Length: 399
Image 1 (cartoon, rainbow, N blue to C red):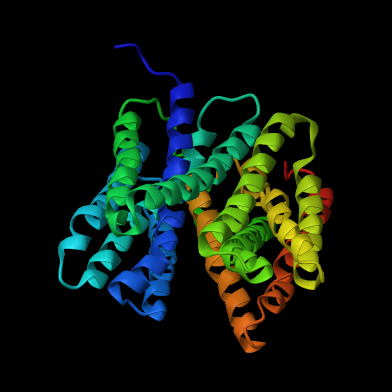
Image 2 (cartoon, rainbow, N blue to C red):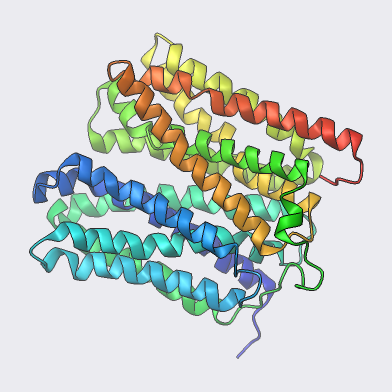
């Protein structure tokens, strides 16, 4: 058998990022089906999304205490198998039980556990691959999440139309094969540790660095901004244009994910010619503009386009923050990436919650929720300015 190269490792990581998009995007597409066909109240249906993020947060946090002491390979394989088992259980067992709700919830716990490990491990594994421009490789890794989201939304909606919504469980089985085969792939690709334990900066020492705490804040804002807009994109499209749920999925989340993926691919091609920190700040300012247009424009089409273009603006935030932190603290180890993933996931939970809560507080007006949530990209811009000032005072911080 021909020995696999690090290009295969990168490909496996890219597929892993697609698996992460399946974890986050697939189930919400079935919320209406669960409500109408199985009589599950919407309050309980939306709990699936909350449990998804809570489990991922839990996995992010617990990984901090062991991830640098265990095998990257074994852990990433386990992550894929957990995800595959979750979707397989959802597609084979859940539809056959009398009370489907606990079965779906158990499935969510399984594949969310895998999703949490993806976030902790994919970045350090890709960082450990030899590359002339690691920021570009990191951006490409995260662009695959956007492309994966587009694929999941389009293919799931097509299959639901062709097979019928009552056969949704067959689609869950189809998606289970992606992480299953990628688990096998990861068994054979070469994997480097980004730093040996003897050289790794202890986590306690890392979190005492003020600049690192700024990176953590940037990650929080990146997650809150990205998911705050993307999770409400479908509802925003429906309320702005009065379109159906299916069309709303296409115009909202699909447009947002397409622009986000495009942004990350473009950056991966231009990374060696761009100052990442300044580019991140510029994207933050652009995102603020998108939020303001979406919330305040009297023209429905302008609001929708701002929502989609926001995907382009936020695209570099998450991978950019990870790359900057990795450059500044090359000895941080996988636990450092775990802290960043934890901060990002807390933001992912906070952002859409603030949008929904504020919209409800102002009579269900979604635009008001988006306007108030503008605080997240504003805070990201301020944090980046603070980071640049700190780097100017401390030239030893390499970003």
